[in-house]
Length: 153
Image 1 (spheres, rainbow, N blue to C red):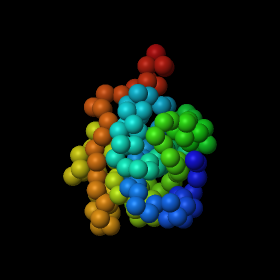
Image 2: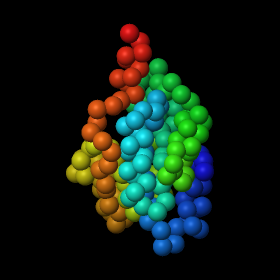
Image 3: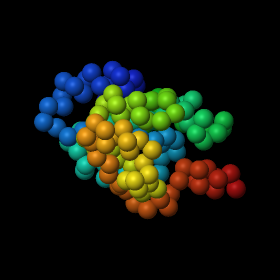
């Protein structure tokens, strides 16, 4: 289910969360590739309910450059929502996921293997409310940027 505003999603989750572990992963998910699918599949195993939070278009531009994203937010959200194991898709536009995490308070914050539990930027926020960090997915050997570079050749 797509709930574009994570603050609205927080209200919905409060009603269904009783006794269920919430896992959350986040990213741009601009050009979907097998690394994304493997991360999301592994993230779904970390909880009973999986939320995938996508960077807004403006946030992607700040992080990846003016030519990105190639796929607009509403379409990226629809694609992620279609994946097995995804319960909710939302978005955030802030420079970090801190506000998103404070609002949703997932039991498990799932990051890809390009991170460690010690260097996840939102680590302090997650630990402060009693959550845990899980590093999931396959080795970081796939990237949207790499695919786009190869397509340009």
